Amino acid sequence: MAPPQTFRDDRQPDSAALWKWVWASTRPYLGYILTALGFLALIVGYLGVSREVYVGRQVPYIVSGGLVGVALISLGSRLLLIEDLRRDSGRLDRLEKAVLDLHQTLLTRPDEPVPGYAATHQLNGQATAGKLVVVPGGESFHRPECPVLEGKPSKRSVTPETAQRRGLHACPLCQPLVAGV
Ligand SMILES: [Zn+2]
Image (cartoon, rainbow, N blue to C red; front, side, top):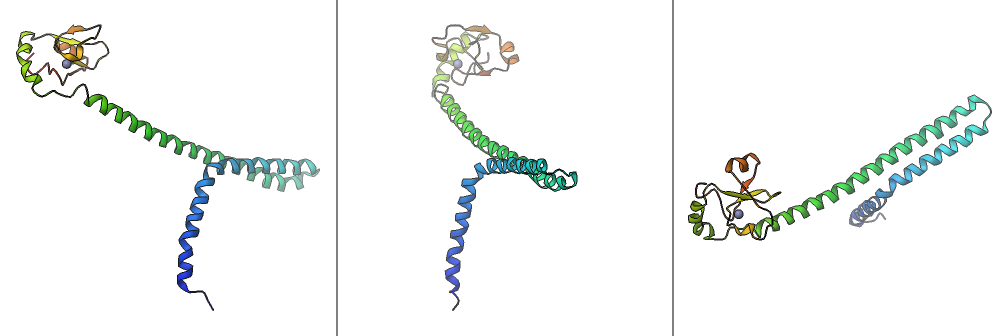
């Protein structure tokens, strides 16, 4: 009696999963294994050549041992390289995500526009029109009274033209461009 059809169907995915697991767990070492086998083939080929006195009988050893060895070594090192790249790209993805997260937290906390702040400071802006302040190394320009500048040891006042030429952007908190600087 032949086994029922369903019995075979049940086993099919199991063995597929097993082979997938085997492949996933040996893939990182496959490069090493192939490279080692390649060196082994080279050594065997070399021993075969050195034992044969006649050149004509050395050729099969050179072909089988030498070529197979070189092919295995190059295949193995390529697999190692691919595995390396795969690991690297995973690391890069994680790093990029971490930097993005950090960037978001840094950006949303101190620079979040406080409701009403810009409106109440527009009058001050008119009084200090034309004056912009930057912190060396900073990426934005501010009004002189901007709270972001508090406690910063070195500030420099710049003209709007200079700020623009350096590619700086207006601070979202004090909004130095709102009152027509
Ligand atoms: Zn500011």
